[in-house]
Image (cartoon, rainbow over the protein chains, first blue to last red):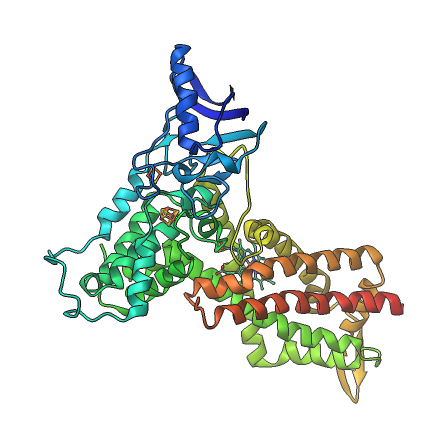
Amino acid sequence: MKLTLKIWRQGGKFKGELVTYQLDNVSEHMSFLEMLDVLNEELVQKKEEPVVFEHDCREGICGTCSMVINGYPHGPMQGTTACQLHMRHFKDGDTITIEPFRAKSFPVLKDLAVDRAAFDRIIQAGGFVSVNTGQAQDANSIPIEKEQAAEAFDAAACIGCGACVAACPNSSAMLFTSAKVAHLSLMPQGEVEKQRRVQAMVRQMDEEGFGACSNITACEAECPKEISVEYIAKLNRDYFASSLGSETKVK
Amino acid sequence: MSWFSTFLTSSVGRKLVMSLTGLFLIIFLVVHLIGNLQLLFDDGGEKFNLYAKFMTTNPVIKLTSYLLYAGILLHAIQGWLLWRSNANARETKYAVKVTRTVNTNSFASRNMGWLGTIIFIFILIHLYQFWLQMKMGVLEMVTYEDVEVDNLYYVVAQAFQNPLYVVFYVICMVVIAYHLLHGFQSAFQTLGLNHSKYSPLIRTVGRIYAVVVPLAFAFIPVYMYLQG
Ligand code: HEM
Ligand code: SF4
Ligand code: FES
């Protein structure tokens, strides 16, 4: 199929604009990133600068492939990363607009690549378990309720891609932060530090300049791992309990 | 108290203020509506005027009314501050915008700042027209069984004879409806009350409230206008 691509180019000779490219012979079996690979090969042959976009695993688990496709972070298919999106979801003659994730806290590095170090700093503030918990435990040595394990597991599905921030009109990082807080705090190994963790991670999130949550739920709609805003409610609960009800003060 | 200011100025703490003041306003609207419904009695405004007298003289209600003014101001100021800082969190806007959400009214949720600002302007006009007139003591008095009270009913009935005002009033009620279509359930989510067993009920009650309460408010001026 033939496509018209409007791609955000920034850096080098581009000062930040949508540039139009024509692409013929796109196979519907290609993934979205393979389609961009084809474009880049054509650009290189024409001695033009290829479009910078990020990718790593190309199987929907690393969270690197950030881009907004026709307004949808990771494209129009729900529960799908850009790398897992296939061209069969587009039609011959379509115009596709591709933009970087947009948030003040995710500055554009070049073209579609943005700097998501703000997420790393939120994790560094508390998204860890301080003591070495050793080898995987024998299945029955630490009993965990089935529902609780499932809740922690669903939160742990977050791949830290940043689509929630990109989708949110407020550029809020609440879905990401809430998933990271929950997946650790719901497990006995992580529960020990839950009071400090929630305060420290919320504080870092705010310091990074992300917006507050208006409960719009665009994040859940666009999250490739379909993380629920129930985790945001849980984050709020935990934050109230920790800030107002516990002895813990995070300086 | 630094831990407390840290809490209140955090993004989650600021939203708690929105949620609590918003819920307070939601309760207030029901009380206000019960009062307004007295306008519908065909008694020349006696029930309504006595009610207004009670509401402005009873000490407990007086105290609550100061809480209410503070609540509205807090809600509005915090709302504007959040609106501004949320808008600042994205510098370059998207060329293509989409509006997909889960279980919320996308239009309302994205426009709470605008909707709230219109409500605020409405409240100012509303207070100027009815409440301030009464406070300034420029209203005519009526006497019911030896008690002299302000004839607020007369001012209200007059205002509702102006078709432009009636239309303005109805539009503002639509705006409140949208604000609450998102706000009602949002306030619970902010409080952390999102639960698979209760949230469907909260959302349903919220939708009913957001339609029925503004509709009942809007019915009164339309009815009084048509009655003449
Ligand atoms: C009848 C009066 C009003 C009622 C009953 C009401 C109710 C509510 C409720 C329940 C919420 C949800 C709070 C949450 O998400 O936790 C809300 C949010 C909001 N309200 Fe109001 N409100 C009223 C008037 C106003 C006014 C006058 C403004 C003026 C600016 C305003 C601005 C906002 C904003 C900006 C939000 C969204 C905050 C956010 O989620 O970021 N509201 N309102
Ligand atoms: S919550 Fe979803 S959208 Fe946000 S970073 Fe995690 S996987 Fe990506
Ligand atoms: S490249 Fe790893 S999730 Fe898309």
